[in-house]
Image (cartoon, rainbow, N blue to C red):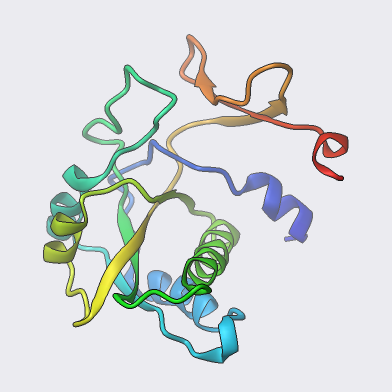
Length: 187
């Protein structure tokens, strides 16, 4: 797949086909792409938890907050929940580059997942305590973000932002994501 097409297709998916499970092998491939990603001083400090079992996915789900702009929506319903998660952990002692490394790793994971035909959603708003208990967070590390994964159960449309950048859903449940024009972001 051409990179430009991959970028256009990699959207935040918030409704999945929950019954279509992901294998640990697939998740390991996505994490492997993050392992190979550039990182500060090649220190490779990040650690990853792969969550594929239905039981562990159910433990993680209540800890997540899904869509700030969709105030009336509390998250995916039964049958729409993610089929897997990847939790990215970083050392407790944060360095100036830590968040950048986490972002780069997350980008590689979601692009790799999309290339394999899966949707994803990077979630930074979650209950750290629940996540730490649901996965084996390494000692002296803490979860930085959670990536929800699965087969997409919704349509997402990119459109030009006119006045507002907030994403929204129409009466058919189609998710609209306004993006600024290129001319508006280049200085």
